Length: 276
Image 1: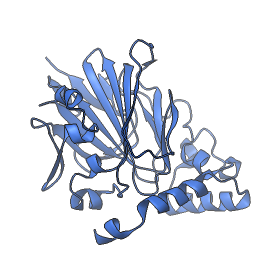
Image 2: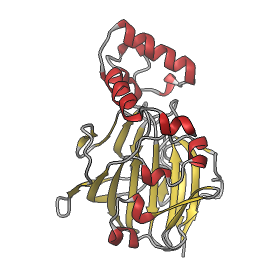
Image 3: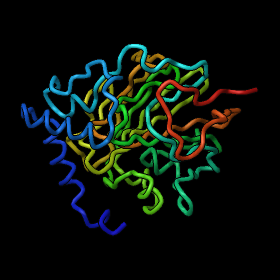
C-alpha cells in the first residue's frame, strides 16, 4: 500500500486526463489498439467497433454498446454497470462493509450530510467495481427522479480489490459524485467514486462534473425540475474506470441469489427485488 500514499496521484490523474482527451491521430489509435490487446476489450459489442474511428482515447473508453447488447431483466432493480461485485449486503446502523477489517459510514460517503445518510440507516448497499476492460457508462437500476447531486473532493487512491482491502474507508475518502433519486421504492443513492487515473466523471444532466476539482463540497438541487431517468437509461460515465456504490433504505430488499463478492456482473442483469 505504501506507493498508494507516496505517488503524486492528482498529478498523474491530471496528466492521464490530458492524454485521454487529446486527439493525436495515429498515436491515439495506437494507444487504443494496445489497450484493447492488453485488457481483452470486446469490441464486437461496441456500436462502433473500429478503433481507428475514435478521435480520442476518452471517446473510445466511453464508447456506446450496440442496440440490444444488454437486455434488461425482469427485476425491480437491474445492475447499472458491467464490472464485478466488490461487496453488497445490509448496512449495519450507518456502517458499510468495505473489506475484512474495514468499514465506513454512510455519512462520510455522502459528504457529511447526516440527514441524507439517516435515510439509509439499517438499509442495504452494493459496491460495484469497473475494471479497465469494462463498458464505462452507468445506467439507471430503476426509474428515478433526480433530487440532488453532491460533488465531494477527496483522495485519488486506486479502487482495485487489493487497495480496497488495504486502505481504510477507501470509498469515503476518494473524490466522488453523489446522485440522489426518488423512486417508487423510496430514496436511492448512486455514488460515482473517482480513482487514480480517472480523469473525470460526468452525468447526463450536468455534463463533466470534474475537472475542475474544487477543494470544497459542491451541491446542486433539482427538486421540481422534473428530471426523470427511466430504468436502463444512461445516467453517467467514468473517463477511465472506477466504482459505483448504491444505497437503499431499510426495507424488504432481496439481492440476486447468484450474486457473490468478486462475481462478474453485466449491465441489465437482475440485481434485486423488493419482497413482502
